[in-house]
Image (tube, rainbow, N blue to C red; front, side, top):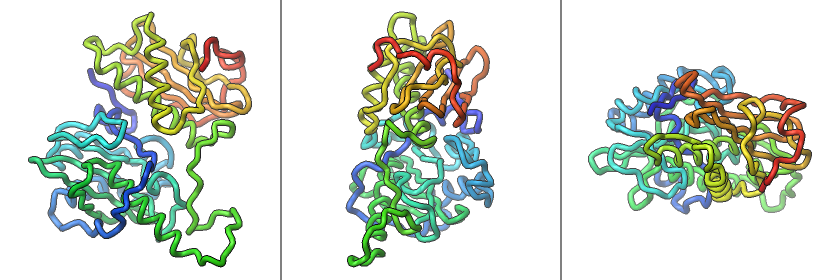
Length: 335
C-alpha cells in the first residue's frame, strides 16, 4: 500500500518521526563536526541541500511537514538505505537499511529562536552495513552546510541527533546570559522559546504537531493490519485509544480526542470550544482513508488521505476553522 505526501517525499514521508526535544543528551557539541567530504553522511547531506536549493524557509513556503520537497526515493538511494523508519516512540534503534529524518528545518526540539548562532537544522540518521551514519544540515537563514554526528554508544536515530543539538544549544544559551541579567520574559535571539504545549491557547505550530502525532498513531496501527484499513466500522475505540496514547507519550495529553468519528472529512475542521484543543477523526466510506484535524475556537489544521481519490496526503491548513458543523457541539464521548 503506497501512501505519499503532496510535498514530494512519497511513501517514506509518512514514516518519518517528529522529535519533541525530550530529555537532551549530555553528549553536547563535542560529538559534531563538518562532514568528511565524500562520506556517506556528506553524500546524504548534500542530497538534502540539493532540494533546499539555497532557499530560506520563507522562500520554500515555510509551512508543512516537508517544506523543501525532499524526495524520499532520491535520499534513500544516496544514503544506501531502503526504508524510512516507522518508529515514532523515539529511542528505538534503526534497523539495517532504515533512515530517519526530520525535514522541517527548525531549531532542535523547535525550542529556540532561529539565528546564525542557533540555526535551524535538518537532522538525519541511517544504518548501512551495520554502521550508524548520522548528521544534519544547518545554516541561517539558508541551510548550506553538512555536519556529521558521532552516535557511537548512542541510539542510531535522527531523534538522538536532535537531542544532542538541543543540549548544545541549551548550554550555549545558558552561557550567553550573564547571571546578573534578569529574565524579562521577552525572547531574544539567544533565548529559547518556551516549548510547553498549552492546550487552552494552541498556536498553529501546536495544532500541526497534534495532527502529525495523531495521524502517525493511526497510520502505525493501520499498517499492522493485512487490509491496511484505518477503520472497519466498529473499531473506533481502538483508534481513539491508540491516538490518545501517542499524544500522551508526546506530552500532548491535554488534547481532547473526540469519542466518535466526525461525519465527514470537512467536519473535522469545524471550530472547537474555547479554552481547549480538540482532535477529530473521520474515515472514508471504505475505511481506507482518514482525516485528522486539530482545532481550537479559531484555527484548524488537518491531514486528509483517501487512496480512492489520490495517493497523496493532503495538508489542510493552518486556516481559520469552520463556524458551523460537528465542532460547534460537544463531541459525544470526548475524552
